[in-house]
Image 1 (cartoon, rainbow, N blue to C red):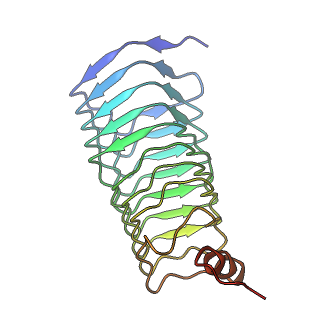
Image 2 (image 1 turned 60 degrees about the vertical axis):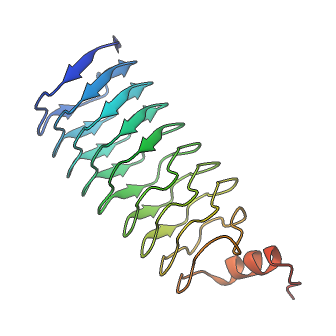
Length: 197
């Protein structure tokens, strides 16, 4: 399929636009573009920059956003299902009511991200940077967080059941009221130096 390269889109209205498997972008830049209620299915973006883009209530299925940079973007009510965000970086963005169902977000940069009340289920987040991220009351279930950077992460009242917490140092996280299962409890106890069993 043809790939659109190095395109610069500035201030355009892409409200409700539908993108499919035939839409591929590489090295493109999107400034202050409105993607509200947009839909993508199988679209691909590689090495693209999104600055001030509004993804409100957008839906993405099987799409790829690899090695992209998101700066001051808004993801209110956005949903990503079986998408890839490998190596992408998120800076000064907002994620109110974000839903991520499956997919691979390994190596993603989400340090300090405000993900309160977000829902992430079955997401691969291996070696993702979540240092200092706010995940209070978030759902982070069945996620692969192995090797992730979790120092200073805020997990109060989060649902973490079924996720790999082997990279979590409970001494550097705030997790009062977080829900975990028995296997995770054993992993965290071992991390604190306890012998389980």
